[in-house]
Length: 467
Image 1 (tube, rainbow, N blue to C red):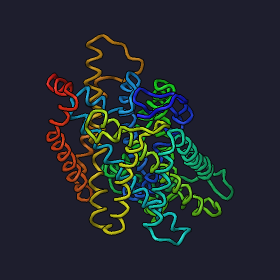
Image 2 (cartoon, rainbow, N blue to C red; image 1 turned 135 degrees about the horizontal axis):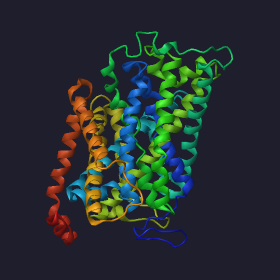
Image 3 (cartoon, one colour; image 1 turned 45 degrees about the vertical axis):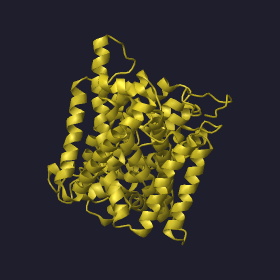
């Protein structure tokens, strides 16, 4: 591995080029994506004014998972993050599964976001969708290949734009609904005027949890990036503790205000709820401004997706569970081949979106839908096992999961309940089926590659037998 001494370098060969401000903004902006700016309108249309309760429930789950992940990451920061913890707690199969499932989720999302970004660009530029998608893929790949600091800077500014937009939205709409905006009056009637607070029944608040929880995915990236910062413990602790106010403010707060300012059954919500809200406030060029913000969200997600996928692949290679070439880093401490391999899948997704949008591309998106919940359940199970071991050994932890083991167990049960609800609903059943098929295929590959792993690292066989 070619590494230099001009920057701090981890024992893995990756440069510690991320600063505290990078990690702070990655943590703050990591959960804000196109899923919030667009998907929130779909949830409100489906659930009614009480949709913010759906986001609140999902937010509690994400907060619990982040608290558990924070406990493990502060105790032992590593680029592999939860894949290493799953391996240590549950065995090699779990580490292999969660790492490849998470990699698979993000490389598919990279391709999806490239296509989504291209569609937004077509709002201003008359060019083929595939061409715009490829351009975005090339730009984000170049950013990741240059250096981890380049990734951090890009994410810092783009996350800053997202955060600033949400804060402006919260302030302006709050002034509007309490009557302090020009031409406005105190009005919360939309919460009850169109069929009541729960127009489709109280149980419907659980129906939108699938969409809501996926829109919050990304908070855990800070624990992976923390290993490439100059102070991993402080970075991860700060990022984890900020999750509560981030989700409360950005998701629950903004969705509540959307339900107040716009009727829940409005067709404008499903299209672009934030554009509709700003237009109601009389903000000029609202569509142009919000499309630009959504584009930055898409690019931010694409950028962080490539980063996350490449680091997870790098970790797999260190364990001889991925091609050894992906461990090679350039003189700037960047895992070049890990990034390129992750990018290839993104390019293939773009091609699939062009050649077969209703079959191949749809299959890829649906098959990745449930895997993030599989990963979260494995994170929670890992924390449960590792915490038991720590407590039994009498070790002290600097950062702890709340009310252990009760909240850990409750979180696992809640996530399993979401998976069951997905299996029951016709529109999400395929995600569970294809997700389980993907996981089963990975476990088959894990079994078939055991001779290679044992030959490459004999200690793995001893480790497996010990478990």
